[in-house]
Image (cartoon, protein in one colour):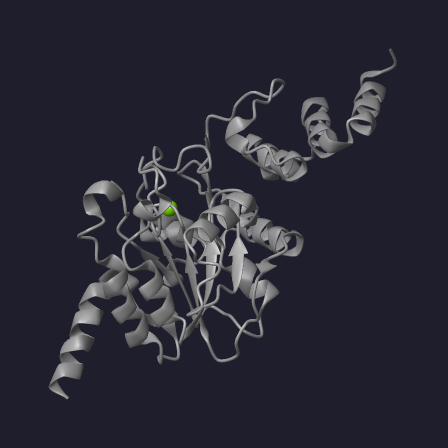
Length: 309
Ligand SMILES: [Mg+2]
């Protein structure tokens, strides 16, 4: 056998499907990753890149040659286990302003292709929705998938469609996003259209000085690709995990998680209430100036105002 370098080269050529991962691993192991690239390519990043090449989800991968990075929190692995750890305001500012994180976002925005299903509509605001525990209880054991669906989902989407383009962004593979939304009838409802779907490959891993590295959903990726329609002033995102907003904290609303669907599907009214909020703020020029943490107070005050007038 030739040199180690030759072996890696041959292996990479023969195993084209794994070539990308192999090249990264080779560089990682032979020390040819410069300092910047080492910081960019954590084990999590290697797994993500491998997933792109092989469609094997990061949680199913075991990298035999790499030492697991203990500082890496992989949301795709176990979103229900990883707590929504607290990030104080200083850290949020710190994370979104870090050059390394901004570079990662810029790179991902240039690589990832948003799956557009329908035309963007001029003058509409943008609503970005998470799936698991936001619209759907994926851990519920009910055989009928409609029983895992959050109550009023179609009513909610139908009502807000008048004012918002709607995108779905989930930390899973595109096939799963399509399957879940398709089975719930979200992709074929005559009363609204979904503008686009995004999957876990559109997410980026970010680093802060005091916390572990974790994945988030940077809205900047959408704004970079569709700047004529969407920006930080007309976008709002719902997710049950607050840290997903860390690159755009002013645009995120933490929704109460929809869990235990078998117990809560007759009482959960979150989407009904959020319909009122979205319609109440729809005419505002700048959504990012709102404090979405107090959305219920805003919606209630608006309802009272309407009753009195
Ligand atoms: Mg979720």
